[in-house]
Image (tube, one colour):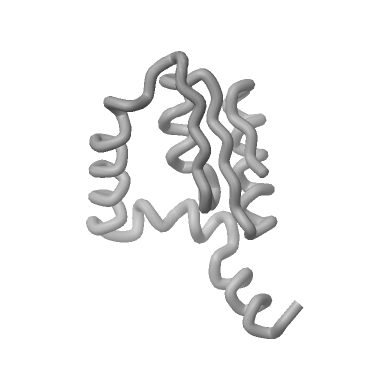
Length: 97
């Protein structure tokens, strides 16, 4: 692993990334408008693939509206955090990779 990669992974650990949406108004607006734009396309017969899912914030918000939700992220810490949240919420239609 390159030294840059380690620094980037440390900067974007799971807990810090998950808290990003509550740090400022801008992040809250991103979440609000993404939900507003995506929700018309989310129906019980749809499957969703999110590339760069981080800690699964959108997956957890949309899981109840779709058939299945798959999230992909390169950071192992994000996927670990995401998997814990899936277990805590008892979701069976969400799968991080």
